[in-house]
Length: 180
Image (cartoon, rainbow, N blue to C red; front, side):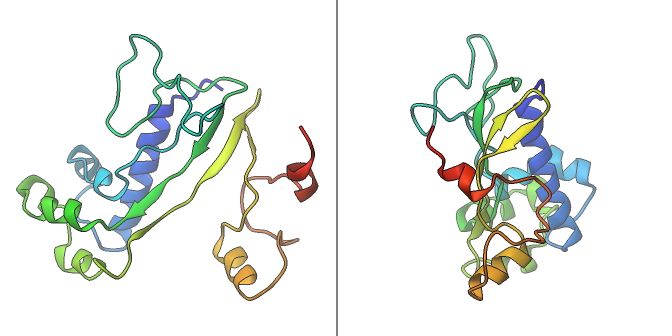
C-alpha cells in the first residue's frame, strides 16, 4: 500500500532497459536511454491495470489526476485493490523502424543487433494478478514463471515444483480452486 503505480511502471521500463543495455541491444547511459523514452519502444503498454467487474476495470484515474501514455491507472496502491502486473519486452518492427529513423533515439539503439531479432522473436509478456494487502501483495496467479519451472513443465514434470525458485509466495492449488 502507498506505492505509486506510475513509479512502478517507470521501474519496469528502466529494468527492461538495463537488461537490454547489458545484453548489448542498447548503448549509452541508462539515464539518457530512459530520458530518450527508449524503454517504451520495448514495453509499449502499461505495467498493468485494475481488475474488477470488467477485465480492465474503471477507476484507474481519479478526477484531476494526470494521465500517462499507455497507463490505465495513475493511483497510489491501497489495501484491497486487485490488479494485474504485466511487464513485457517486445521487438516490434514498426516501432523500431521509427526509432532507427529518429536521430535522438537511434543513437541509443544497436541497430544491427536489434534487426537480427525482428521477425524471429516478437516478445514476451508475463502477467500476474494480485491483491494489495496491508503489508504488501498476495499473488493470485499460480503458473510456471522461471526458466526452471517452465523447462520442468514442458518436459512433463510436476507443477508446482517443491523447490521453486520463484521469489513471490504463491497460493496453494487448493486455495485457487476454493469457492469464494
